[in-house]
Length: 194
Image 1 (cartoon, rainbow, N blue to C red):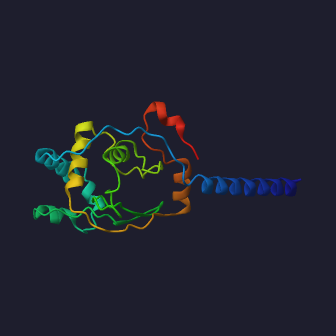
Image 2: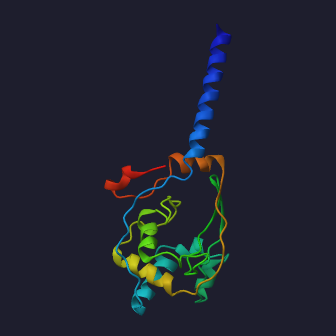
């Protein structure tokens, strides 16, 4: 009797693990619907300077999105660190490579509209509908702050810097499949699709 229980339990666990593994792989590219905020970048120098302050200081975007090793030292010298991304961040979920935030058309945000950038910042949904990693602090920015940040990002020098895809561990793939969700407004949360 004990052997039958062990055999049945082993078979059940094997099927469960296989099922979770298959479901995890099938859910790696879930897409979400999110609104596009009506944001348009400004060429106003005061707005751009405010955006620079939000990116460099308040929200700390530069800390992750600059390839520079010691960002604080560069900032203290009064210099502006690049936002070309490609900083490698090792986590239990895998190796994360930060995005190029310069307006380079090939490798940065230059091919995105202002509304697409605003959607990423506010809701955590990329141009292709997939969720971004939830490390950003921009989800609570109001429209004026979003406009300032996007205005600043549009004003920096474009830098061509191809960033590799993230390399997720098994834990990271599981989190991406079942845990990672964008910051969607209540009425659109049920619109996730495979």
